Image (cartoon, rainbow, N blue to C red; front, side):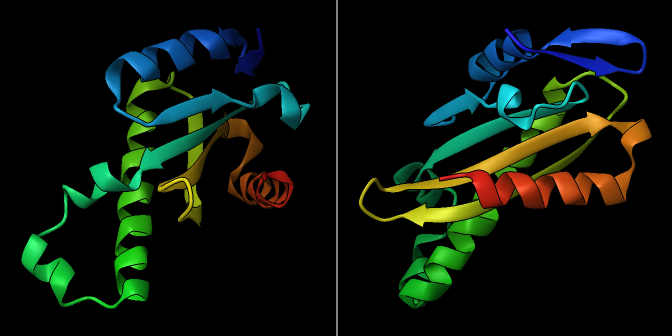
Length: 137
C-alpha cells in the first residue's frame, strides 16, 4: 500500500487504482507510486490496447494515414484516454499524463499518469514528470 498526502489528508493509492480499474477499460494499469519516493505524488503506468484505440478512429481516415501518422493519432488518443483518470482522483491534486511508447510487438501504447498536491506547483510537477519518464521502461 502507498499513501499520498494531499493537503492534510492521507489517500490510499491502491484504493484509487481499484476504482480506476473498475471504471476505465485500460489493457492494464499499474501503481508505481512507491517508486517516486515522494509522499505527495501518485503515479500510474497505463497500458492501452492498440486495437481498442483504433476503434475510436474513422476507418476511412485511417486508410489515408501513413504508418507514422497513424501512430501519432493513436498516441494522441492514448493521451486523451489516460487523462480520464483525473475524474477518479481526489480534489486538491494537479495532474500530468503522457503517452511515451508505442510497443508494436505487444500491440500496446504505454502512458504515465502523475498527480501531485497542488501546493507542489506546476514547475515541480514538470520536474517530477521528467524524472519519472526517464526512469520508466
